[in-house]
Length: 195
Length: 185
Image (cartoon, rainbow over all chains, first blue to last red; front, side, top):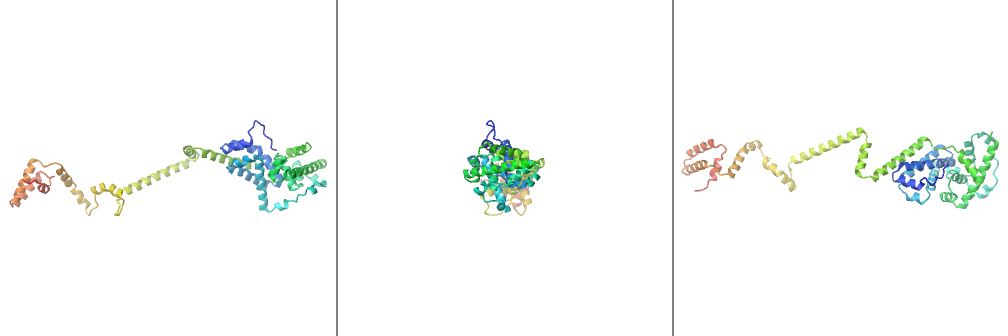
């Protein structure tokens, strides 16, 4: 989980500026601050360790190669970082031709309805918390999953998620609400049926 | 979204997520970032610090190779320069500066069919130049006048004997040249 740095610690923009001036330690600090959140966002979105690692590396490399300070400074560094990662993953899916399989038509009305109860047999087989979480995430529609992961692992605010995904704040709010409801139900049911 | 009801779910997700990038991946990214930062630092430095850093970073073998390479280059350059100076231009339209540079060499050792003969003439040339510089002694001058008078009277044989005698006494003397330069009385 990405933890908001205390006020005594330098901000992301300051660390980035120092790194651009040749301070490698500033990058290490920046990397340690965001590596887990970004990686968990990616693996939650694609469900594939190898793909997540590839996109994760490309994202950081693009930051390393970039000479510009302006572009990152114009928006919040974290928003920019997650946006790069998201775009890289979409590019990967396009190349692999898998995006269409994962893309689902989002229908606010449809997802507002109560969700069907998960199969108890299936839940019983998921003995580990991590596997249960992954299964719960996989049950979410792609757009809801993305918003939920950006909130949970990226610790982004609604307006930042809206900017990143280029959707309205209301849509983001709605997607997050449905995602949280489903996750709550999925997890509570799983805990009930888990041994 | 700041609903208090949602926080437990988010916290649960955060606490139970275990995925993380592998150590090799971390190392790759941090190494790339370190290299890029070092390159940026070098860019902001001057020429000499950058050169010193490059030499320090190079292996011992690399440093020796660079040193030998520089020496070889210097040797080739020097050799070519000397060779160019030794060879007079054969073209008539050679630059004037080149011709002027070659002129002293041409005076001392002009290209001729018999260079060794020219070299044997060198003492005589030197003597001639010395003779021009200083007038002959009085007794030599008297002998020269005597020879001139003998020739004027048509006594060539006696004149020749006198010349040989004078030449024997003063081997460095160019008698004929001195006779030509003898002032008229």
